[in-house]
Amino acid sequence: MKLLIVEDNLRLARDMQQFLRDNEFVVEIAETFREASEKISIYQYDLLIVDLGLPDGNGLDLIREMRERHLDTSILILTAKDGIADKVMGLDLGADDYMTKPFHKAELNARIRSILRRNKFNHSNIIRINELKIDLLASQAFVKDTPLNLTKKEYDLLLYFIQNPNRMLTKESIAEHLWGDHIDQSDNFDFIYNHIKNLRKKIVSAGGGKVITAMYGMGYKFSRHS
Ligand code: CA
Image (cartoon, rainbow, N blue to C red; front, side, top):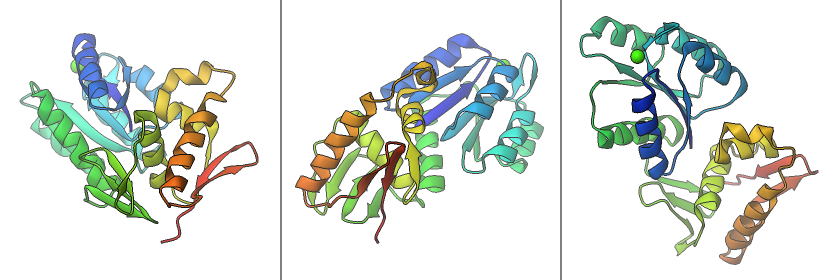
């Protein structure tokens, strides 16, 4: 899962980034309204963490902008203690939840997981698709009841595929989602191939079938049949 932290307090942003990376997220930072606005116009994120008080703009306008562009990106607002009006406005604009500073990082992580579960996985910690079962809390995938021994990248890949069933995912979008925004500087995305090959092999040998297919060198598709 890929997140964007919009926060002008760089120390706090870096601190959150490290913590969330340790919790298996791909995490980018934008320090200003302008930088954030630029990033959301180019890249896709699963969730945005938005500090409302930015030096060059109001985070609320960013939420508005986000809602006009990407309906399926979740939004978590960060506010100061007395920002009741802002919280209400933010939620009205389509934010999913808010947190008041200062907060505990463990709570931040729990809120993010809860929002993503609600928005992407229909409130459940267990996802079933075809013969696959994924336990989100344990970060463990199964084919029927056989646990798959996946690397972190393979697991993240699988999660990205099952969020986008029957859709062609380009190599570029897979790379950005799993490795971060900077990857678009890369002129070659062949490194993805090995991760996908290994993931497919593990699913097939556990009896899960050929669910991931290559699309004419453009990208890959996960086929849902149940
Ligand atoms: Ca601020």
